[in-house]
Length: 79
Image 1: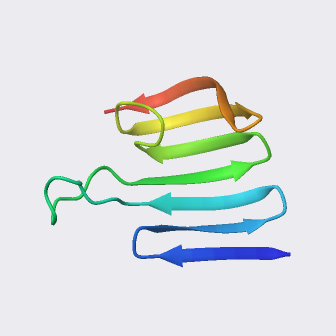
Image 2 (image 1 turned 90 degrees about the vertical axis):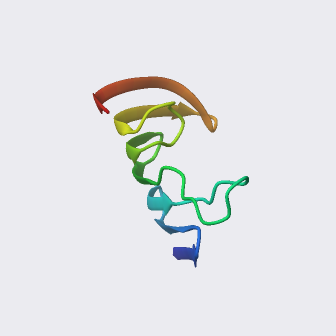
Image 3 (image 1 turned 60 degrees about the horizontal axis):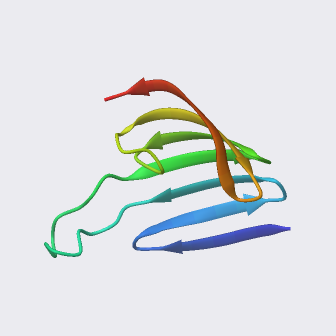
């Protein structure tokens, strides 16, 4: 079964344990200012993340989750 949720702030397309998610958010203090965006390709408990998701800096990260929490992060490239 395919799950799709897309709006002006981002989206999620999921097929079983595989998904693609992305997002952009507005700065809560400056209406028209955009914060860092992200895109993540997820397979089960693993994710390759582009942008600024859970880390403090934009980059490319290989992330392992356990029960929805970040278990380990390997930085591939950071900016």
